[in-house]
Length: 430
Image (cartoon, rainbow, N blue to C red):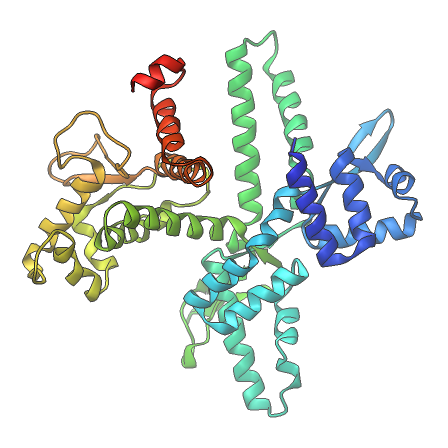
């Protein structure tokens, strides 16, 4: 259950974006939970047609879920607010900035259109970008190809994903239905451990199913290349002029993939934490590791990244970043290219806490060694996302305490967090 502050914030966000009528329905759903259409009309004093229009707006903008629940011989449709999706609207500015930095201003405008309209198809995006208003046919077609290519790039990199009607169904009801079916199919009386395994498997199945629904491949029309024997085969090559042979399906509805942008923001926070703890060159090293292991960053709840060796980071660093590595370790001149692997290994040892030889790792550790790798493959490292995020939360708490109650209060909080439950005498002696 969401806390009251989050509910109030979500209501203000919806009121500012859609007005009082939509906000009144959202207020009822946020405070009373999921409701059927007659119940929504009863609490909001709206006619059914008006309430249905509001629900359509909320679903179009991915702010509401719906589900059908069996009640006797009939099915009753319920609606509820997607609170997380609503609060994600606060990050729109950062999402647009990240898109502009990576893909340019046109991509930022495309993402802005999809954000403001909930979900869009490729022809609607091209029309909203003003292509149809261009008078000269040659420029209009060139602009259409350019925008189609941008949408294709955003889709294949998972910044936008296809969406289907099934993704608007409430995941909680789907989880309950699958869990009951799995427990019924199990037969007999299941132990607590077996029930936990069933529930974990059901949640993993739901996550995999929803990821399959959002697979970019489902929204791409593969071009067919005709061979000499008349048989066609799919091709992902480009035609002359740079136009992609594979195109975005014009019938597919596209929406923003918030999780992709969440991962980008998390990576920037991790890089900033390393810079704050050590120095800028160490931040370049962790940035290269994040790029090298980017394919393994598929969802936010990952506690560890993929593995990468220190010597494999050079292709992911610019020349200026490579030149700064020696300065970060106290040198006065840039290192030669032959010593780059040695410098990267030194930074990896520093970030993993192996530079001092202590068995007990302190709060400055960001990496861990992969114990399953042999000497032939070299030492592989992982980024510890969960530990790094916990470290940043503790530092934020210490800063808030110090700002409000001074450095002594900060020291007390740090002692209690390190020692767990402590008496007043134990705190005073620490």
